[in-house]
Image (cartoon, rainbow, N blue to C red; front, side, top):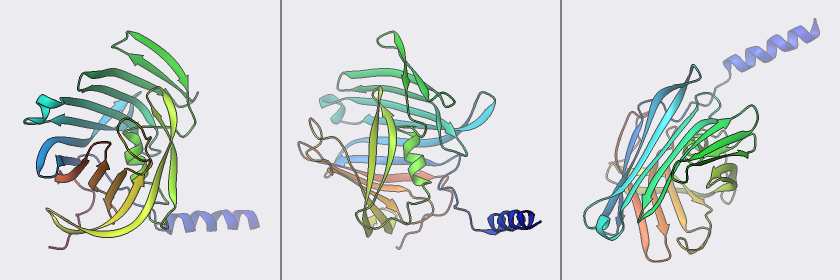
Length: 256
């Protein structure tokens, strides 16, 4: 009897405790303007759709990046990233990576077997395929973005603390670390927006000067919208600002 009462009490508390609201939903769309100072270099878009995999409804995120104007003559970019991931757990089922960056190309598709912790990678450029063992909580590069927006600890972080996840990229698992810096109000085309500032730790080398060369500003609300990104590159600095959006789960809060 005592065990039954405790079970009923626990279920009651769970039913009436506030649950963390998802940061996004089907129909969400972002468009970012990528620029070097006042020079417009290109755009990137990110959209959430519905799809069905193995008779199960899942999220299908499509990300595109491309150069515009004179920029495409100096360094042409046409990137396509897609991810199909679970609506409840956020775990990925399939990803697509089809890119052309200044002549460097990739055309891959990956299929995750969550039950066996494996991913089958099909490389259409090389006409090859291989199976790679992965960790139980692995994310692909696109699903990781949505998983982190929904992370239960993201609002509890203190300055200097970080969230670390396993990310599958370039046929291997890397430890992706998102370091929290603090809060800041920034001026955008939508008004003054309260944000949380993060520094994703990246690999140094040909592109980035230091591990903390990337800075990310996300809205300090339930949406967790990426509103600005700044990258300190080996040559110069690149910025991406949110230029257009629609389909947010909650209204964007901005002070005019």
